[in-house]
Each structure stands twice: as C-alpha cells, then as structure tokens.
Image (cartoon, rainbow over all chains, first blue to last red; front, top):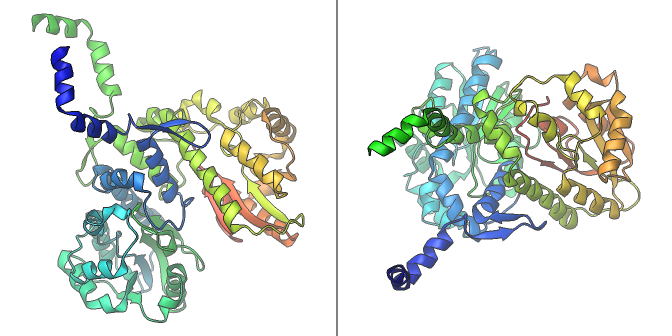
Length: 255
Length: 255
C-alpha cells in the first residue's frame, strides 16, 4: 500500500494526463443531462457532420481534435471509406446500363476523395485551427498528397468500363500543374477533364460552381451516373444526379 | 497451469461464446484485405447507411444484428439523436426569420422521429428479419410506442414559436385513430395536420408521396422551414426545403 502510494506520488503528472487521455473517464453531460464520455460526445459530433445536420463549421471543436485525429488515422476511417467505394461498385454493376457511346460519365472530387489531405491536417491540429488557405495551397503545390487507395482502385475499374471520368475540384486554377503532377505521381491517369475553379467561379459558393459544372456536362450530352465526394457541396443543388456517394470527412466543411 | 487447463475444459461452451461475443477478438478482413473486427465492420455498415451510400436494404446483415441492437439501446443513439435535435434548435433560432402569419411550417416524420419503434424491433431481431407489415401495423394499432424525448421537447418549443406543425407519415390511413391516441398519450398535441398515406398514395413510393405533400403545402402558402425525419425518403425529390435534419436509424430502409 505504502509502495503504491509512493509510486503514485512519484508520477503525478503521468497519472493525471493518463486519466485525462482516457475518454471513458472524462465524463460530461449533454444539454438534457445525459451523462456521456468525451469520446461519445465527439462521436455524436462526427456522425452529425456526416448526416449533414451540422453544417458550416469552421473548426473541429477543440475538445474533439484528438478524437478526430485518431479517427482519420484509424483503420475505421479506411473501412468506412472502403465500404462507400464498395457501394459505388455495386451500383455500377447492377444499376447502370452504360451506353458506351463516350457519353457515360462519373465525377470525382479530388481532396479527400482521390488524394488525402490528412498529412497536411496532421500538422495543423486536425481541423482544430481555422483553415489558412495560403498554407494549404502551399502544401498542395508541392504535390505530395497520397492517394486514397480504395478510390484509386475504383477509378481504374471505372476507366476500364469506358466511363468518362471528370475531376471536379474546388482547387483553384493556379494549382493545375501541381495537381496533375500529384495525381499522376500516385497512379491516377486517363481522366477526361480536370475542372478547377477559375476566377469567375470563385465568386460563387463551391456548391453553385459544382452545380454549374454538372449542368454544363449534361447540356454537353453526358449522362452522369454517379459522383464520389467528401463534401455535401459536391452533390447539392440542381441538377441532381442519379446517385451520390459521400466519403467520410470530419476535418473541414466546404459550402 | 493444470488448474487453469481444468477450468477451461470445464467451461468450453462459456469460453467459446464469450470469445465470439467479443467483437474485438472476432477478426475478419475487408475485400481489400484490411483486417478488422466485426464491430468495426458493422460500424462501417451503419455509417454508410447514415451517409445514404447503402440504400434499399431489406434486412440488417445477420452478423450485425447484435451490434445494431446494442446501438439503438445505447446512450450513443440517444446522444446522436439529441445532437441532431440540438442542431434544429440552433438553426431555428439563428436562421429562420419567422413571419408569424400562420404560414411558417415545420414537418416531422412519426416513426423513429416522434415515436420509437425500437420496442417492436427488439422483439423482431432488430431489423434482421424481413419486415412483416401486418405484424408491425398490429403493434402500431395498440398505440404503445414511446416518445423520443428530445423530439418531444423540440416539438413543444416549435409550437411555442407559433410555427405550424405537420406530421407527415408513411403510416396508412387506417392507423389514424391509433396514431393520434398514441401521440397524445405520450405528450404530443397541438399539431396542425396529421397526414397519412391514403390508398392513392400507396401507389407511389414513399419519397414521391412525401414530395407531393411538400408541393401541396407550399402551394397552400406555407413556408417549410425544416423537416426532421429518420429516412432520406422524407427529404428527397422536389421541392427541396431549406434544411432537413436526419435522425439516425439503422433498423430499416423506406424508399
């Protein structure tokens, strides 16, 4: 007993920080008085972001930064993303009577859909600090973003069916060559068009810009079978396409 | 060592079932070869249902029935739902300039939005068996579904702002009096209209029926500020309203 007490007194800082780090010990209450752990609180924040009930957040809540950091580094994030892609595959093989006339189309976002920004956010508090566009674009211009492997595999499968692939990103035009280099470097090639935001598009919200792109593609005779993206702004507004597939992304919100 | 072995040999059934019940021990692999626990697999199934990547499922996958049963009985389900309602409250107080002319409107689903069907599904394999409409309607006709407490609280708050409340359900007309009795019994009163599916509506998919209701309400001069529902069929199609709030529901899918 004396030895245990001595041990605890020797390591008070370790003991306290270990306690704080254990979500299940750090209990709190919801507004209705429900007693929950911080982990449970952050999980409900994350699922409500994915349900699109929480919108327009500018930072990840400070108390959830560690939880979100763990999630995007976890196999759960990988499995959640893989399952989303698996559903694309299922839809493509069962519900898309492709005409194979060069007008079958599929749209992809780039960031956190084809390429991962997790390495950037790992160094920037996992979304817990307000986004600095200059800093993020600086990182993008170095072209070192890794591929999301499940997306890359599906991209190649789509290509082999003859579907035209359009990359529709909110990245700005000045990042074009860095973006192409990065995509090719990690294995993406053979897309039909890379569409980035020009100066005029920057006057609109991203969802309006992306809706305009869909409208244009459809008026050019393309049948958009599906979209894969990590933001609701990639699917919202008119025209609505047959199916949209949302990859998980609790790091930031693009409206 | 001998004693331990003797102990294990005495309780082989207990030992095996305890092992199987421990999700973290029962490992399997995803299609790409990622090694995951059954819990992780079922969590990715659930989040992809909520993301609307998985659609039209007729039963919960057998291997996830226990996981889903635990989720809907858990405080996590309560916290997830409470957070969704909290976001309704935030939206109402910051982004809805109500005119208070009797034409401000809000729509609610009934099942698993105002009233819980969890007690029914608890006796029916938590969505793991194909839905038997006769059996479910028999249970509904007894009018014993409990309220979702967070929804009830928000319902009362909405009412106090003068917003007209419309209950738009895929329940059929013959359940009208049982539904009213059930709602009133658990504390809901003061709604403007209860809209149920008549024989003509049954010819349409639920999402078409609900879109028709929104169209009718808007043509009657109502401004629909928001919808709370647990199914994407409550929000899909035109007209799109300002905001939709999706409560979690991994038990069944209504298209």
